[in-house]
Image 1: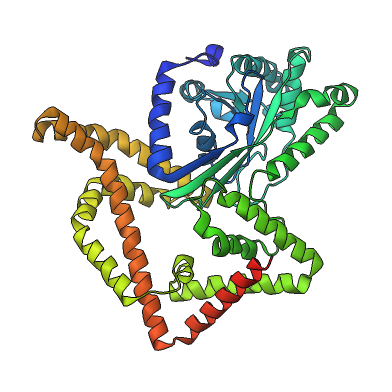
Image 2 (image 1 turned 45 degrees about the horizontal axis):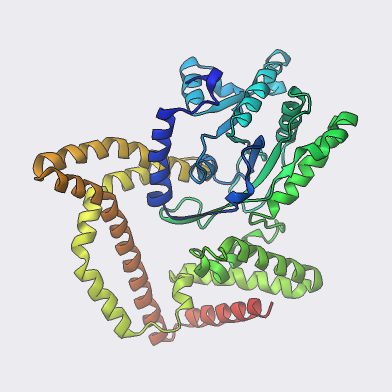
Length: 442
């Protein structure tokens, strides 16, 4: 399907989406938490507005958590080549022209706005990233006016007879580019653009600014937003020190715990700047010492690293070593090649995108190859299929084995540091305890 019927259901796109969803939601991330989907009413023309911190993975986060064939708007210059344009239309991406593209080109936006309304009337959402570009910071940057201008001009194309909703979307990654992390997606309450129609008729520029500021406020409610740029690293690290253990929680996700923590810290910043400065210094001290000693916060949270526990963990690692070897051998090319290619990215924000892209692409190569080999060497056929389906499972088990190995080695390191009375570790342990108690008093 092309641009003319981009709003129509596409069977081939849906098959690709199911495959992409599986690798994204169950393999690449260990958990994807999606909240607030009931806030979206696709019977009303809807624009989804996510924050933009992790390159193309932000788009994937929305695609893979909604059962819709969503349409994205992207800058028009990437559509210049016909072959590329066909691929982009198949992927349900529409061009938006900017003034820098020329005034004649901007006039073509009228067609895009009509296409946009057609998409939304077909109960498919349109996704626009309102920050315009990405940055790997847990902070909402100044929104571009484009999303609001598109919303109003799309409404204007229908004679202001249609309601349009803009849904703020918050994305939070437990880590931007590590494998098997936690992704949280929060869909906020919709903003009814019709509330600003009269203001737009009277003064379009003023209405656009009003809607943009409203959207900015609503987006901050569903994401982690660290306002203090000077102490950003300290506050960002404090989130991990205090709330890392809640990363997998669904009933009260870490994102909301982080918001509460940041709000309390902001209050302290206003009420007691000196205590706030001490808090930031302690956070950075813990980070520095933990890095020097190669100790994780998970290790610090654990009160005891008894020789008995470490011995049992080592036995488990030894007993499950064959599983690790099998899983690593069958998946090493997919995982490692994807990683080695991804870290070549000059922009750190693209590491996760590149890693997932190579990961997905290699699965198209090795998947059929493994299936053919399984059918050749394993009989009967149903056992071959079962063995084939176990390959990604073994890969995940191998990854979990590796994590347990790291935790066990870390536990041994801490046990040894305690036994020797290492002064740096004593300082780390004391500072960490003081920091956690200080935050708990909030």
